[in-house]
Length: 334
Image (cartoon, rainbow, N blue to C red; front, side, top):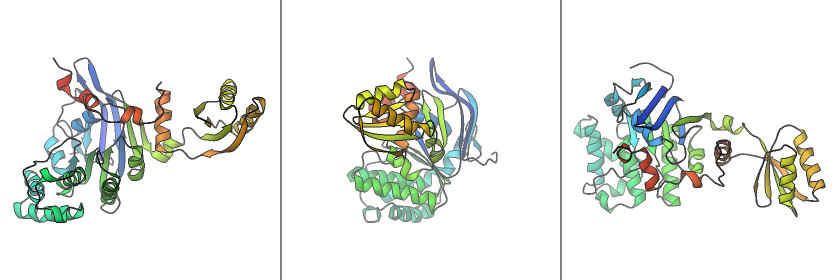
């Protein structure tokens, strides 16, 4: 174990499956608190998580989780972190209380202590009255809550949650997000949350790590990254296409959705350029103001810089069975 200020840290981390590079020389630093893990399908998110847990051996490079080496101390890492996978991992024939107790025992907890703790965490995740029901009879929301309970029975310092709100209705989704947020803010724990829902990440996380084709393309505080490009939002009427063309010809960068144009603010003269272009194209500006960017906006800007023409994050992030196969070595090896 090596003491470090980061809960997760890697240097030159690489994982290859034959000719396919799933992780490409990744230098990652995840600080305490809540961090979102983002990236298009096949970016390497699942491979990264499994490598950090010591379930997959890296081809090159090094890394640590909570100060423990991912190559040689995987067992120690798995004892000290909580892992909530995206896939089904519960025994449908066990009651919730026995499922969660068993998870504690697997971590080395005394059976009596594990049972007592199981009651506590099931109440914490909203399953107090469902403790003695078989997991196989649970709704999707209840099953996700049970998975969360199994991952926090030992009060881990770091929780790794892979798509924790996947398949949940709005009420269950809100409860799940509030619960993991409470774990971080009130419990003083850290979270690495992989999600394809930008609103979820922005609701819970202060920082993001973004991957693309196995490479780390962005990491840091969300607010700092949003400052990369400030935009002016223009609501145009009667000639939005001509206005867009004129602004582009003037050297400005424009993103357009219908009558709404977002223009990258270069400096104070950008506003004058927009007005001059509107006058030149006889386009009426109904409203113009500085745009407050969201995490969705940040994602789209980064992907556009990489050459992707996408209208929303759902175009690239929505999970699908075919997309999940990208991170599976069994799909790549003959």
